Length: 100
Image 1 (cartoon, rainbow, N blue to C red):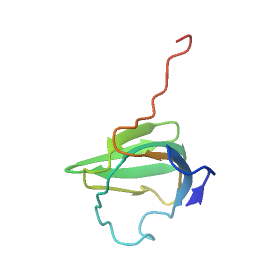
Image 2 (image 1 turned 120 degrees about the vertical axis):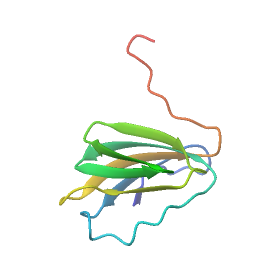
Image 3 (image 1 turned 60 degrees about the horizontal axis):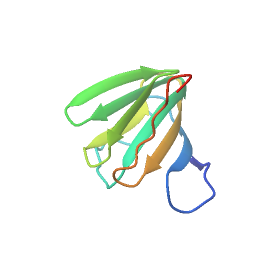
Image 4 (image 1 turned 45 degrees about the vertical axis):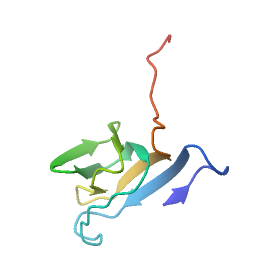
């Protein structure tokens, strides 16, 4: 995990590289205060949120309340490279359509 934000407070940005599937520590769902948005830069990410599971590829994103049990890792034989934005509860990151 590489922090990309240098200021304290507000939304924090990180670049995260998850090792290939099967090489990471056990899948343990966790919870904490906050809200997270992540974008897959390369590879495939496996994202477990509560009872649901998703597989996201490059150029796909997800956002979620981190109080819901969750886990993110690689879904393939290659690492998954992810850009993650994390903020305090209630802060959300949104992309606006062009021209808005």
